[in-house]
Image (cartoon, rainbow, N blue to C red; front, side, top):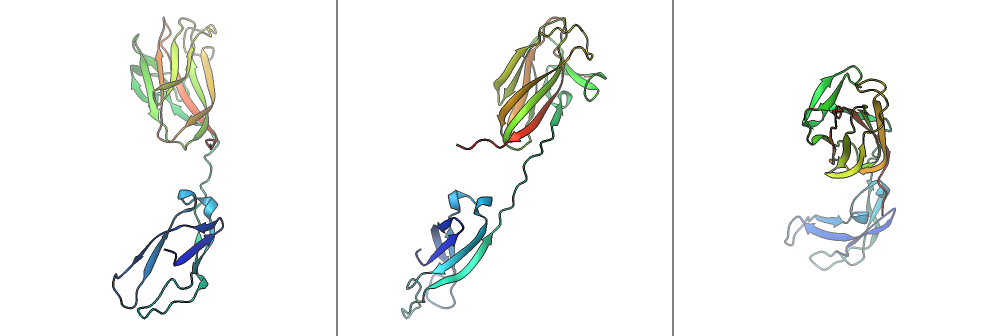
Length: 226
């Protein structure tokens, strides 16, 4: 496979294979060469012009006549499309649109979409969804109602692992859903990959039925490379 060399913006590529359309002597014959992508995969850093050079004495005919070297036998261009970064606009997932276990949907004008979810019993309750955004670092905001007649517990799970847990103990003075009991909690710089699963997992307490309004996520940056 030393018949040719392939050189691009980052230097020479490895020629990893060659095949001939007909495996016996004769004419014409076509040879197809395979080269390894720089770094193992083609990406935007590899974009540009590539030159294919024929090495002297490497290709011969059936009489043993060698083809002369050709430093510019052919060329090709690589143009991997540039993927635009995800939008920095917040994406809101309404709690009532999640997969619910133990929760029920409540119509209420104080919810961001005139609805919210609340616990139906005293045991664990779960609301979750599959993350459809791009892989990256995200800031997360949760909207909920921290009422004064209980101290519910809530965790945010990423693929089943808790990334945040807290007790609803603000006791702002309202025991019902209204502007006073509405609260928000933020998590910054959470690494999330496309296809991950995010879940609320919580326990209601007293007269506070774990009322949740939404989860919102905002793209911050790509994941750091190591």
